Length: 465
Image 1 (cartoon, rainbow, N blue to C red):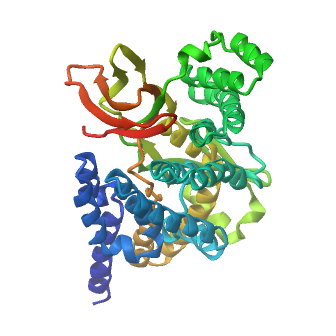
Image 2: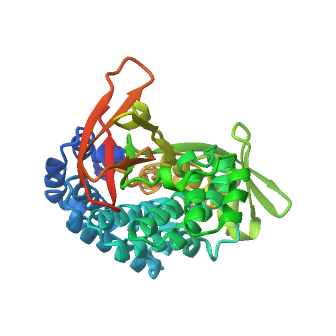
């Protein structure tokens, strides 16, 4: 009878294990399919009907971010800002909660509310900024831009290890665009200069993304408009970009195009095998194939756990990793009349995601190894006493030792940027995106009734596979 009951429990636990192993993006298949087909109203309805997303605290932040996104894509900018601001408050509240952190060390990170990656917080402010710009609320847009840049500083202030992604060039660029659209050319110049410096340093070395040509022109142009002629000449020489003739190059109005291309990466579970070796007062967990080695003092585990760990020799740890979703389109341009300009990449979200996870890999893997090693040692000890009980503990350990594969999956793969001069009155701007293969180009025409001196913002999205 005991064996039968154990079999039933084991079968139930095994079923739970198999269902919990699915990556988060597979559990969101219907919603993501609707987004990829640009059926945003239906995607919103799918979100609204999901009790899991709305009610479960640990998934609620992702629900709010996705609601903000689908509202934005439908042009519901006031509604979009409300969702993103709710998400922002939740991010702030999360930082004050420590209980879930302690619980995740004992079980796994998936039991706690999703707190968002650093770059996801930055992108939340990006969407809110754009929503305010679309409503011509420049004051609120600039507040969001500042928060976009300050959020990274706040997150890394107490981190002794300096991450690759600690300053956002695109955030400074967006701030410059917001200032200039509001008429504040002086602060626009400062923001553009900050953006150039981050592109030249961090973005160039970490992501292989150099200063966009349009940003070079923006920096030099605003320097001249402020009367900073020496600065303009210095940056002209530094960036190898000629000084413009302001009289002949000043348009009556302007269009700023932001190209949201593709969809960003998703997370999947990655299992890594480690061998255990004791040398002196240290326990070493090694994976020779990946060149990984983590050391812990023997005193960090009990004597009984130490004996059981030495008997284990090899065990497997779960960790998340990103999987890219390469976009169909690789290049785009915008044209009006005889004017044509390339849309330049300015925010490599896919690369930032990979680098961000890589930055914290050692720290989080270290926590995961010790946590799971002690659990496996306990399982080994129970197996020696009772095989059935040990098997149940083993399945329970497998269920609780799952990588957290949640992430904000509706972010674009990358963002591009272009400026287009407009004339007062009706303008027809053609946007064209092309693939490297034989896929038909994506072509759309933007009709803008321009007023003198105004800057207009349009977002172009190419998502469909």
